[in-house]
Image (cartoon, rainbow, N blue to C red; front, side):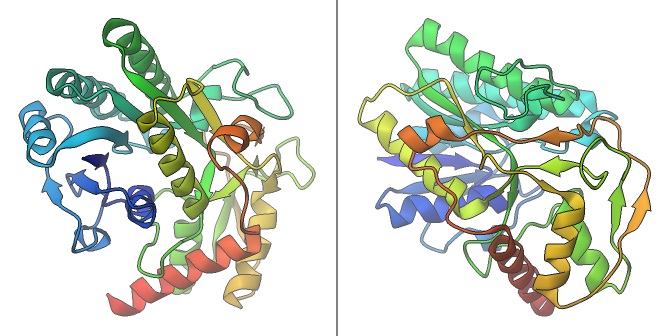
Length: 323
């Protein structure tokens, strides 16, 4: 018996793989390495190279490794870029999920933990987002994640799929010095790259209706997130009923300006960020309550924002020095 982790060679997926191992569960990784790194996959974990668009490959992976559940992390996750690449986004995130679910049904695998996103909420009017907050996604990425949740719900009705969706907020940190976020679009990798290259990091917009004019976000630790994936997998294995979706949020927001100050503290590199225009689709504030996940999925904030930033900086710096 094992859990297939799609996207398990990526930043988040690789942390999930290690959390599964720590909990005594057997992970199997499927990843096309479009954004992941084979070096992120532990040597003792089976690795299947390929795409979730390849239904035959998924069927073989399930059969070869006695897969009994799937943690579906793979996907195209760049909300801003998805505005210019909608077809690619839907192909990866909707068609890919459909083919994965079809292979699971054909193989008799009926457990899934789905990687969803805060992007399903768009620009919420609620001060603190809960799972019942209106879903008004503003990008093809957010729409594709909401469709993914609908697919799971429909498949539950059709075939008895046991599932839950975890809506991530802003994931940062590193739970292992060898794992880092290499995304060319996420805030901290962009800031760290600029600092390493001797450039000044920039903030996109400082005229939002927030205390310092910069966007306010809910930052959560990647290792904490991974622990809750494992908790969800265990609950599904035990046959427990779970909510259809959970917010993984802290209930506390930090502005981009405040994060920049934390970066300067953690790196020891003082800087005054440049101000660039707003990016399309960036809400002024999005902060979530994680009460349901705390109740059901061992969700809690185990690290301060400063600790998360410092851990990610150390992992990134180590990767830069080794490359």
